[in-house]
Length: 383
Image (cartoon, rainbow, N blue to C red):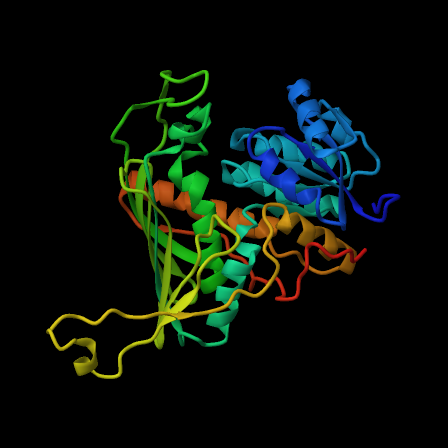
């Protein structure tokens, strides 16, 4: 429903840490109008509403019961993503959910089937892959800048979210961990580049049975680690490409956003898929072996050719905006529920492989993914 101000009505359920990142952007997109924030902690919802000039707040019903709200943003914890999303659909509203779509295949399938039966849409984060960084890199690859993509290497490693998050236990519970928390950014980007995942094989380890909160009121509190905190992955794609990935919260050395794609005619670096922009460069292969060695007999430093980003750089909420415009235009939105399910299916297959030491096929697939046009302007009024 387009509101009286000529924008698409939006509500938010969940006023926790990540709500700031969404509200900073959603309240600046002219095509969207945030009308209400709901949370079990109504005082927290009221505080966020006041901070960002949102007119209404309260419990969940303050959002689901508002007839002007057409899309609801689900920012709850992963364990209840499906339950909350189903309640949003039951209220007759489209869903945009933080990743992952759910924590198991059965309930996540039910969510998509329910939405289809009701004629409603489901969009799933991350939408970082819709930003100028990844989208410019995707267009370059599709234009043949590195020839035929062959394989990718990605890495995300650091000490873990307990060094900044005041209550990080849920990130080490079932549905969390570096794989389920950060994997959606990397796997979504890989699927944008190579297409659907066909199979995976992985190894996992859990060096510490408990972790300790480092900041905030709970500092010094121990909590259990329910999932592998380091996972090494090999992936095979339906189209023949391959990828190797590392996800770890057991590394003193921080390496985030490492993402390289090599093809028959060069290698391309993609920006951190947990951001909306960044440096993109292409490294060309040398023409002859002699050119690779300097006069001192050392390997020459390979210089990348920078590719200029195309598009307006914003932040979280971009995928929701694309979904709102797609609803109006009658076209598919890019960060679809089906993509979100395929990413979850892949991540669960990785968990199963790490637990069983065997190759696991990924049963789901997705059609060729759309793209965000270079002239997509989040700050323009198009309604």
